[in-house]
Length: 413
Ligand SMILES: *Cc1c(COP(=O)(O)O)cnc(C)c1O
Figure: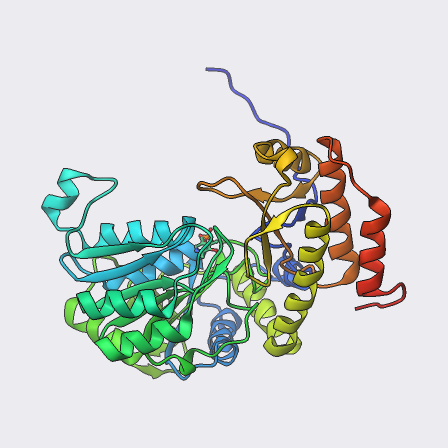
């Protein structure tokens, strides 16, 4: 074996224009880089965590005491949320794309009995879990939810709020109401909606658990903090059953955020080592979100998504999504089948767009933290250029005219 020290890793600046991560906000990066060396029990780190908890409750519109964040990314928060699901628990999970599909797998892993695990260790077929598959590109509707929950009356029900795989918005209101009607505890994957959509947890009383991520709508760094929120009913269930996890047990984790026995306490106590850098970054991301205001931000996403949608439609693409932060599209018939090639070409130029991660192959272009006319116009031009490179006949003047008609020449939005 040869001994080798590689040169310092250099990573170029790219434009993250996919479903997420989005481009981390410059203010967040500053906060991360400016944090001093301090351990996880240093007074300002602990105070920062308490302040984050309070800001997160405001952003998410909730009085849930168990509202805090989990070190990691979206799957860390989701694993924490699913930790109360025990072997043999009855579950109905709605899956309409890549991410809710993985959530459904996680639920089968959590609810599987030892013999079900042994029979198929990486894809256990838990008899107590019913997965309702909704085709890619279609939403989970109130009717679909109602009929499944009425039939199965499960202990837990699961849905993704926004399914980022296909770019579809699912019916949160219908889900919450059906959970309340049928006595199910609702669990929501809000990884791609928090910080983009203007919604309040406390308006959805049928939902007992929520999980999100740092690096999408909140414009924070991946591997900082992934928000979670739980009702007292969720915590009561967890108390009565326990969970097969120390690190991702919400009751243990909440202690470091100053939540003990259902009460806020002045200071957190040790659960695991936390990072002062991550706390500083997350704190700034939450401040930024509160300063922008969710109503204004969600309007802005809608405005800019409409421009991107209209521009790619003018380029001959067919948009099949309805998420305000993401456009999922089919290329024009002449380019069908060349989606991966197009995405790869964009990536080699530092323009990070994505294909879908499960069939059918589509292209996904996102605008996370790109809410101004320069950024969206740049995304449109880069995409048009990539289509031209594959041989599409692009009328650049028409595209410029469209951008100008939407944004004007002097708008500094
Ligand atoms: C991105 C995403 C995830 C996965 O989150 P990570 O941050 O990659 O761990 C899960 N669910 C949905 C809906 C997502 O958009």
